[in-house]
Amino acid sequence: MTTQKPTILAGIEAGGTKFNCVVANAVGDILHQQIFPTRLPEQTLTDVAAYFTSQSQRFGTIGALGIASFGPVDLDTRSPQFGHILSTPKVGWSHYDLRGFFAKTFAAPIGFETDVNGALLGEYTQGAAAGLRHAAYVTIGTGIGAGFLVNGQLLQGLSHPEIGHSFLARHPQDSFIGNCPFHQDCVEGLAAGPAITARWGASNSLPPDHAAWSLQAFYVAQLCVNITHFIGPEVIILGGGVMQQAHLFPLIRAEFKRLINGYCSEALLQRLDTYIVPPLLGNNAGQIGALYLAARALQGD
Ligand code: ADP
Ligand code: ZN
Image: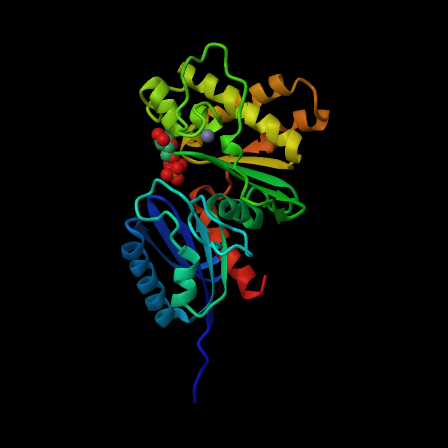
């Protein structure tokens, strides 16, 4: 008598420094996970594929795979570059067909998204955006990226949103030129981790009362005001390394209130501590999102 192998989900949170790989019975029911350092594509993906093959022998057939990838990536399903990494300073990865590698290696449907959309989907499934229809997720780390959920759907035009490269009003006392290689003083050029380090000589070791943080709150709050006026989300989730500085949250909320200057509902102003929030899933948002993408792909979505 033969018993049929169970079907499992595989998820990859593909980052510029590490690939976090996970297998699960269902989105919230993780069987095993392993991290591989990001090297050249062939080296990295050979390890990842071998990992999934061995986990599949252990736990069951991979029914679907979800990939939440560092960007920029092409998410247009009609494009010949769909699933490819686009131009990136990351050596060896420019124009690499990441989705295609897994499509060739595993006979399973694949869900493919940006890392920030993956984190947003994780928070939507089990975190700070659970039960909501409109949500924003902004990551402030090496770069600044954002994903938006409107009416339960990820916002996606010709490219994924790149609000991290939009422009803000400069603080009158900020003389830092900005370090975005494309725009100098876009949001990322003024407020991502490397901008803080370039301006002040450090980022994670600055004390909570350092002038860096009120300036940071001024920029992040402007971004939150713009997101509020553009999208009208029910929650703005702020993640990434820089937002590990928990004391930033009250500063950002206070600056948000000052800058929006009454041009929103009173109810929103009364609940800023549930409007501008850290990710509830912390560092696990991306892997939960990758599994959600796999579960959706399994259903043919
Ligand atoms: P990545 O962007 O590669 O996913 P992170 O989100 O950890 O990684 O972002 C790294 C950037 O964030 C670096 O520029 C670093 O200086 C900054 N950073 C990381 N942790 C902290 C922290 N606790 N406080 C302030 N800045 C931090
Ligand atoms: Zn820029």
